[in-house]
Length: 607
Image 1 (cartoon, one colour):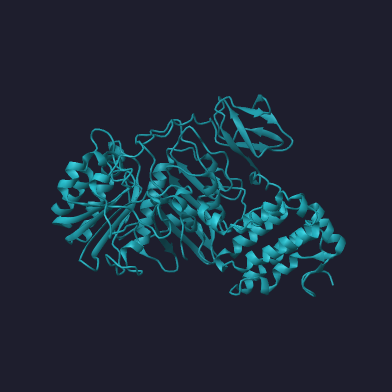
Image 2 (cartoon, one colour; image 1 turned 90 degrees about the vertical axis):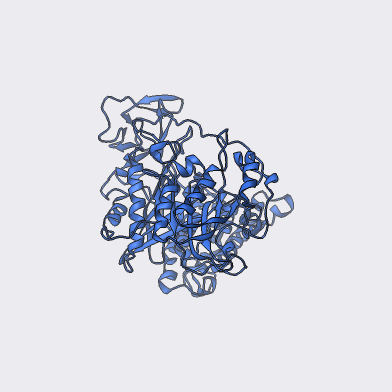
């Protein structure tokens, strides 16, 4: 599977579907989290969370998200570290003959920044039951241990709720338990719970004790304040030499944002004495973007990279991010140390060139005099007060506290302008409830699971806009690829074209665009395309009732054209093509086009 952005890491392997996943990070965007879940489930809407996102708690907590649970911090948790800064995902996929586990370690947050304005890296390893890899088992076990530790700090009641189908994370936990546990190689996955990332990297290099003559260090952030200096970087290089992992005076390159390198800029005299090279970040895909990735790469040789090793992770090259553990007041950080096996070269422009793997340009330098502080670091706002319960239950037409909740807590629910105490008679359940006194919004559990918010009604222009950016694209890609008619410019037609925008014309424009978008889908996208198409066509039923009525009056069914191979990708399997049949049948019935003739004679419609 080709992965081009962090979102693609959540796409299931062919023949599998996403079951459940753990995600942790410093910050996240609600839309990106929902897009991650949408890719993970191929667009299937489930009455239970598919992803649990453990984020650094701030004064803002996301409301209930589609497919994603964002647990509250436990009020009694011992939050001994500074920031929850690790950016990791552990995903469980299931198929007809087994399951897979995928570990993703990212340097970027779960936001649009890594896809639009910042340069980040991610690393992936998978465990496949059909081709077991003991190194992958070791890596995934280490990451799972971090998540189990981390979850003790959060209220995971939503994930533990069982309404007859088992808890959402049962399959993931079971898959981890079934991994080999004995005679495993050292894990490449590192986290800072017990030791600093720096010391763990140095310990891990003992597996390959070669002396390399070059070290590259990249970071999007360095220290500020009176203690900021080159000490973290120079001390690490000194340790490499002392432990036999680098030559006595290796060549050192530092990749940084020269106009925002914090306290490093104030140490110009010390940096000049070191005779290091400073370089701007570089990316062919995002020219001009700022470096956010944190990485260290070292190897020997002058043309080919000999005996290379690489660290990437969440930990900036600062004391609190790289040289301190959780126990010593550092951040919770995570990263990986690995030894690339493929052929790499220091220069060039082919696939083997190092600049194809890391955001670097080794052909130009930045003078020490050009380094500047940039904007100061802004600490996150203090965490909100967690609610007494993280969800409510609707049972027997009554909204009430979940089973096992303390009997002595008083919880109120906002109903309009009033705050009413629980239990509360309620003929129909709400999608979510706002609790007093915290003001937190929580989901509501029924016998069928958590209530899903209904899809918002959509016009044709809305549908065309969403399908034009399918699968989800970065803002820059959208601006480049979105044509005016796809972007919904006709939602408010001008007087001269309003008269010609009659119902049948709108229907034909919809179907023509659908066939165009559908024809360029890949087999890996097909399941998600079918689910998204089903949802969007249902959403236009009421707003486009005039258009649908015109189709019935004329006895025309344009939707059946989507089942024609000429309007589908050529490399779909028969099973994949058949996946669209029940979707079109359901929408035809919903639109009451069952007895209408297909636009393609003899296909799909009434005869």
